[in-house]
Length: 551
Ligand code: ATP
Image 1: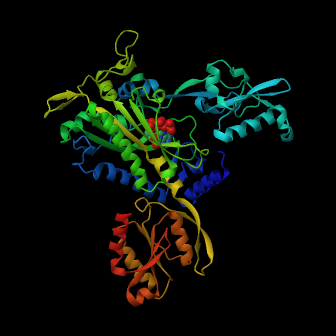
Image 2 (image 1 turned 120 degrees about the vertical axis):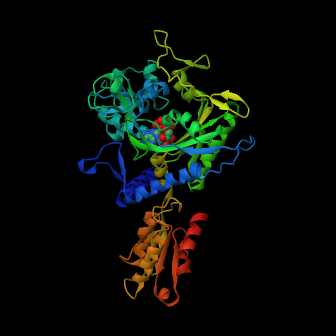
Image 3 (image 1 turned 60 degrees about the vertical axis):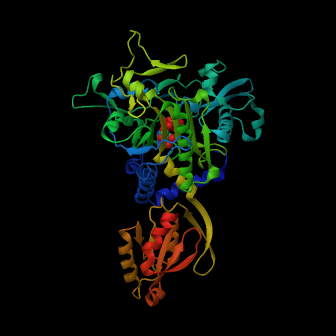
């Protein structure tokens, strides 16, 4: 983090999230559990709204007569809800069993654990003593961190810091230096160590959580895994969906659900959690149309974030370079957001859109595939047999109009619900000034959430707790409650009540005042423009519905 303003902005967002009941640390009264988060009363509503928008916009509300521009074939969308624990063979054929790991290093002295690819460093020399200072930070923060560590290690005062000589070229990844032999682990000073040589050699760490099935757990056959992605459940049911619904290729299946990854270093609030929710689509199409569908989904998903108000300038679409692609992927693009906890110019992944080719359906049919000389072939074990057996089931598609049979290609837009909630929260957070009741400027914190996402759509506020105003307000609240998420609040001055709603992201407030009793109109206050207009009481429901639809 090289921008202290952004860091303090992030601290404020985290504190607002807790104070207003959006997000709490899991098991907090026992000291919390790293990498696990609970959603409070406002947070659960925000997250449900987000998932509902995704489901509505991508699955339920999809126009089934819509076509891929230029291709002509209408496409359908349908949904699934699969289990978290699946047959262990699923993960063997998907590649997760062998390949879903990170490299970790432990520090023998501090007992801390690090992701190998998150460590970087550089040599510092002072009076003929040389050490490779390692940091687990990123960007400018890593530079400052390594400088502070060097002062401490050599016992040099800050005013004499220029007596320390630094290797040219800035910080370099530790993994690269170890691999090319320019650094030995014995020379590396771990991020929380006082002496060099305490970091262990890197070792593989599978990110899947393991569990046992059945009461007599023991043998290897009972071993099962919590899914690290929801996608595989969709492949498991590809044939079931084809056989039981009227869908024809091209079509997509959407699923929202929990996934689990035993992340080595969960951090940055909910961004990297160990339990999180994904919103995934597997879109099945004809191989020769797959490149066009890939572009279609990449653009469609990009536009979805914009349609819900994410600031375009903070979003980035990044196509992966060939050497970055997963073992199965023909092309992948990430939609990334400039989260405030990242250094200026850095972006964090919100969603990946991957062209998976026919890898998954073929692997689950024939056995786990590997790429050899550019082609996907069944991986063989030492005995010459498939290393991981497939189901043996035919997962091809027969087009009864063209009489063609083929294994569909898959485009996978895979989004994280928690990361999206975090991005929308960060993007919505604003501090500005508003005139208070006396016309004086008052600073306010406001969440400018899109009305579709806002946990509460409208607050009903009697101006004072007397003169019959609460009665009218309660009647209005009851008539609105069945239609929209709304709340009633009569506590405190009207200014404070507006401020509370601004912090919760409520787009509209309806205030019942003296004039309401005379002419049956109420004040509608808009959170962002702060305009106030008068509306007839009996038009409130339709006026708010229209506003919500048009937002
Ligand atoms: P990263 O590189 O950040 O670990 P990834 O590339 O492994 O992410 P994918 O496997 O593509 O992520 O998962 C799809 C989406 O699921 C991500 O874009 C993200 O929104 C979400 N996601 C993945 N891992 C986590 C996590 N540990 N915590 C929260 N969300 C996650």
